[in-house]
Structure formats: structure tokens, C-alpha cells
Length: 98
Image (cartoon, rainbow, N blue to C red; front, side, top):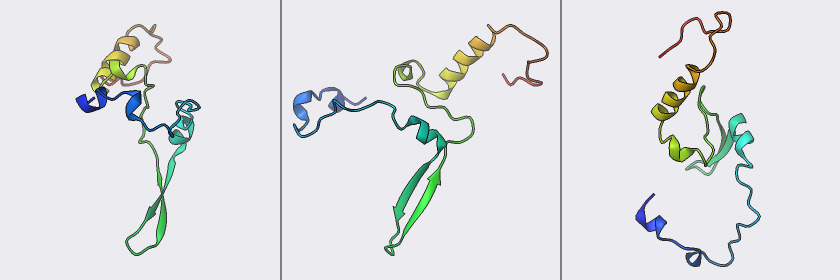
């Protein structure tokens, strides 16, 4: 977070903005299903583009993001949890990637 953003206070926001009724994560499920973006082309026409999360992509909730700043941190934590799972040869993946 930049120093400029960190120094902002509620006094910096115009009074017409009211975020009291906001709901964190209300579009999360829809985002996982795909996002349709309408793009205006230079010639004045419009086209819709569908964007999906790539296979294996995960969106972290805001309260855990500070603990997992990148994919490496997430993967290290998950590998630690995998080691705690009882091993059952029938349910274990054929080739575990480590």
C-alpha cells in the first residue's frame, strides 16, 4: 500500500459517497462463473467478451490475503496441510507434484 493511500482519512471522501450499505464479496460467485465485459471498439461498434478464471485460480478472502502475498506462500501452506492428512493409498493421487 502506498504512503499516499495509507494517509487518507474519511475526511478525504466526498459526503455523497455512502458505503454503509455495501456488501463485501457479493459478486464473488458470479466472478467464478465468468465476467462479461462490453468493449467499445475504435469504429464505434461494441463487442462482448467473456473472461473466466484460469484453471486452478483461487480468489482469497480479504482477511487471509496479508498472510499469503503470492502463489508460493499459498502452495507452501497447502503442502504443510497435505502432510497432516492421513494417507490412504486408495484416495492418494497417482503422482503428487511437490
